[in-house]
Image 1 (cartoon, helix red, strand yellow):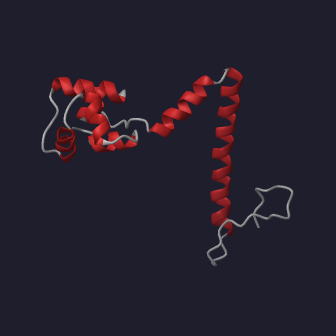
Image 2 (cartoon, rainbow, N blue to C red):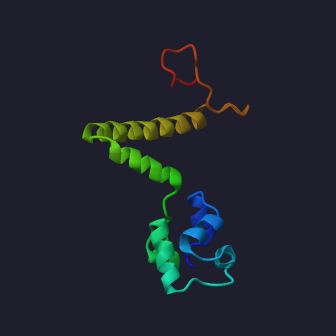
Length: 132
């Protein structure tokens, strides 16, 4: 399989036992698939893809796009539950976070005085993002 089943399974936070029960196969079969000692047949490949909500192309290695983790799925569901205004605000917030962290990294490099402290926040300032 192109993407290790173990990686896919762990990214969703499930055990071999849970997966084997869901696919109606033995736990040892899941173990052999994960160890590369056996490959799932066509029907099981389709069932694995359906269970994890991924394409068989991902399972077979035809694409390197990784499946979403449980946390990423949770974030997407939260985003989808917002109205358009909420999505707009969240998008702007994320963009601001990216810009803030990019500035923080640049300032940390510029302000490194050689003692290992690269980004000390000036707590006396009204602006918590001010560095000294």
